[in-house]
Length: 517
Image (tube, rainbow, N blue to C red):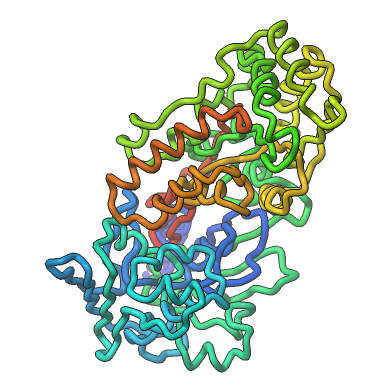
């Protein structure tokens, strides 16, 4: 009888192990391109940094699967009748070292984020808080509209009502920071496991600058989800799609590789077109300032021939901003479309080009070096555009490449280029900022600078909508920026995972919500 009981229990254990009921035993492998450099929530910027911070820290609120702010460490909140004072009542929670987390930790985090030396990548999300903008502009005597006299209550006062403030609260930059721990880190906060104090669903158990992976382990109270998450790059220089096909990883987000190779029997693939690639002329160069010349170059692009050579993964762009990147249907319906490429004519473009060249130094077109990322598909599409310029206009063109989008944008920001083939998206607010004076896609246009300032500073939806329409109208009618294609972003995960819901604004995900069937 005893032997039968033991055999039965062993049978049950085997059945449970194969059915996935022991959820705490499974490890989720997530493919990323680079390991984080800094996990300070007030400074997190790269994709790998954001996804790690969101899973290792918790804020007052978080965004749900519909991009709606919901309660996280805030048990509740009140908004004053004038919509300028937000009072957050905190749940009881603790840091990873066992110390109680209080409202002062949120207060200190906001204080840090509104100091210029911190270099928070999204300082504008704090502008509506009293004193924050003044502090960020250098006035350290400005009084910040934040109060934490009660350890369980945080009060934030704004200069004016802000329709998007609850969404901003969900940003990693608003996540808490322990002042005592920060001061004890000797200026290395967020740069290693011993310089990091977390309060989230996962703790970091292995991470160093030279590692190719970052290991997260769930807190015991969250044992129903994946016990371990491994964020990993490839030691064999394999892309994330190839690693998915080889079953090295169970989940990833990928923009450029061929996701059609993925076996749909094993993996789910969700695709969105949120990034547009455009030809951008540097408007501070003789070529970029010559509107008749850029008009002729646009007129020489045969969009129909380009459409014929695109594979199933790419589509033609219909404007500077992808419609799928514009969250609101109102913005989608009211945003203008580019008609720059609607009047292709090889003969007329040649005549216009020859006339425009007369206004260049030496009345001669220089050899164009087009800057883009080192990706075979992107370079192939660009080569099609170049072939028309060479055959129709007789221009000599070279393609110069950099490693990735970040390097491309940095080079463009330096101004050391004449023309580039670059991505715009996937976040509208971030993309609009790129056109400001001194930024990567500098529009060199005082009118658009003023409208962008108004867009960034306004907290009123209708005002932002009006500014957005003006910005798109200007950009979509300017031949110094020629939208060409939309590239897909593929969200891929193992079919046995449930509860998968990516935030399509920043492509992050909460691992604590994922279970294995």
